[in-house]
Image (cartoon, rainbow, N blue to C red; front, side, top):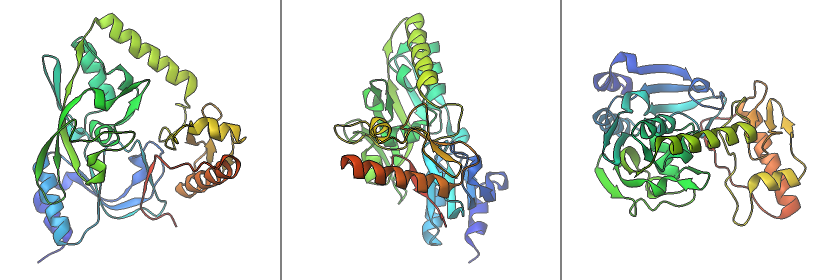
Length: 303
C-alpha cells in the first residue's frame, strides 16, 4: 500500500514537497515550528488528489496562503500544510472584471487594477494576504471589503467537489463566510471594478499606504489586527483604555503605535504571543466586561 508520502510523490513533484519545514518562514508573524510535510501547490487538480490521499491515509491537512493571519505553535504542525500561493496566482483582466486565482496577493491585484484604470480595490492594496484568505475572511479596510467587489468564487469541498458560488451564496459578513462555515477551499474568484482615472486610484492607494505607515507597526512582524472588533467597540481602544499600550510578554508586545496589533518585537515565540493575547483579553474583560475574540488563526502544537 505504501505511505502517504509515497502517494504524495505520485501527485506532485519532489521540488514541491518540503519535510520538517519551519513555519516561521511562511507566516508574517515570523514564528512557528516545523510542519511534518509542506506542499507548494501548482493547480487545483493537485489539490483534489492530495485531499483524497489525505483522507485515505487519515492525514491532517491545513491550507494556507501567505500566512498573514496565522500563528503556528512552536512545536509545529503534525500533518500536511498545503500552500496556495505563487503556483496559483494568475490574474486575467476582461473589461471591468478580473478572474483571479486564490494565490494572488491583494497588493498585486490592486496594482493590476491600477494599470487598467479600475477603481474599487484601493482599500486592499496594503493588506498582506492572498485572494483565497481574503474571500474566506471577507477582508476589509478603510470602509471597503471584499463583498463589494466579488461577483462569484470557485471553491473546492473537502470531498473534491467543485462549486461556483455567487456573492450572496458566499454569505460574506464581518470576518466570516460560507467558505469558513462549510470548510470550502477557494480556488479563484471573479472580481468586478468601476472604471476610474488612474490618478484618482493612485491617490487613494497613496493615502491608505500613508495612513498604514503612520498608524500601524509595519516595521515589526505581526498578523495585522490581532483581535476581532467586538460589537459596539474597537479592540485597540479597549486595550489602550485598559492601560496595555506597550504591554509585553517575552518577545511579544502590544504595539505602542496601534494597540490592536500584537507584534513580534524581539524574537518572540508562539507561546509568548499566545500568553500575551490571553493576558490582554483577561485584563480587558476584567475592566470592561468585553471578551476579545482572536482574529488570528492558531494551529499546531504550542507546548
